[in-house]
Image (cartoon, rainbow, N blue to C red; front, side, top):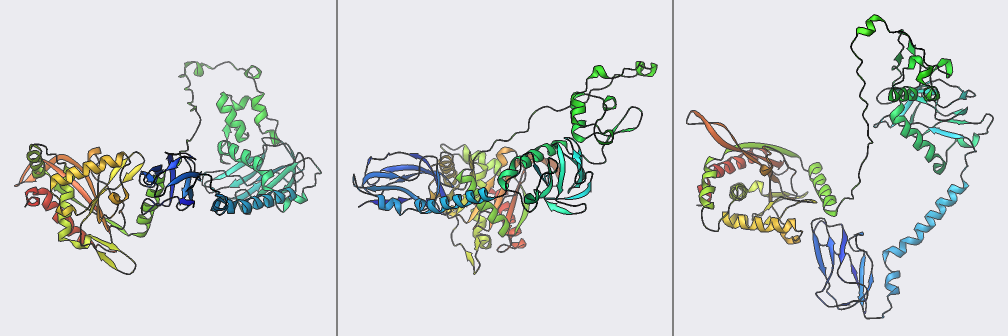
Length: 535
């Protein structure tokens, strides 16, 4: 009998997975224990083995595809077995019919919508700034029935940042005004309609078909980001009088280095519009002899105009990055964080580490010493080794410290169970082994779960002090900075010393300020006197 295999939940926080690679293909004979595929979870890429024997009859999720937990992954059964009933019972086919019906309804609805007459352009409230959500029509410079040319200013629109001139990108007659002076409307609401004189646009006043307005709207928004300028801005002629020009004309003139005082405007009231600048040639300009003052003046400095194109590259979020975003957001926005910082003198720690590492086959890092000190401090301050729930506070009777490790896709936290029972050398060996597995995506879910406290160290990158987000359900996380050389006071004398700052982020629901401070004081004592950790 055929067996359905669904996308497995390979970690406690996994919501969906990506099939990184299939190691078998349809028609292959499968034995119990064979690796079927490599699946990328929110924490690592893991091998997924079969618990059944038979022939691979169907693959439901192809390589590179993402699917939620419990979606049909594969079907294993006897060769030639009919699995059509299982396929028909999967979630995908059930949702295909409603989806098609929905598309048909949408299509028929669009077909039934009012079409825009030929030559008519629908103009919506433009987005004139990156944060603009709505705009107010301050002044209409055209009225219904007026002839409009490309480049003419239609209205002055007040945004969240300034009052801007909004010009037309079309030629025709202003047939309809949708937002009166003083009225406020959301971006993309019908602002005006331009088209041939006498065109009936009554069918467009109550609503614009979405499919037919997308192109004009897109063009307006794109242009306005560059061309809209504050109403107060204007050019001055060489004689001191104001030159009236559209924002687009000013932009083109600036790019081409054209003096607008030499350009004759053909727009309303002599306003210089786009076509005036584009058709202007310097040869047509009237040259005047230079005065003696101009001859002796310093040469003009050419205005720098940046060149280039703004661009973005979109990279699909990995499962690990999605999981990090979910968990850290949940922690930051639910747990009331507060932070305590203390500075430890690392003179004795540096001397002790040097002696320990001189022993054969022994290697201990400063981070290992911090982890050991945290484990011992937690035994004296169990309140820090707690977890918050809505009904009770859970005191962990064991100590399991998670050590944050950076990997190419993000961050993982391998855990050292019963850390307080480990020696410094055992901590060092375990951390190196787990960190290596983390970078190779070979950590198991068990090796990343069950922490009661977390240590994050950025000292190796030269970071002297920082704060971390609590790794829930922990109540605290320690941020470890770099050891820096600085003046310190010893026995009343200023000498060169080596200090290290550590910052404790605490969940105020479980750890009060005094409790966190006492924990840090104990931690400092262990770090400044490492011999006490060997007792």
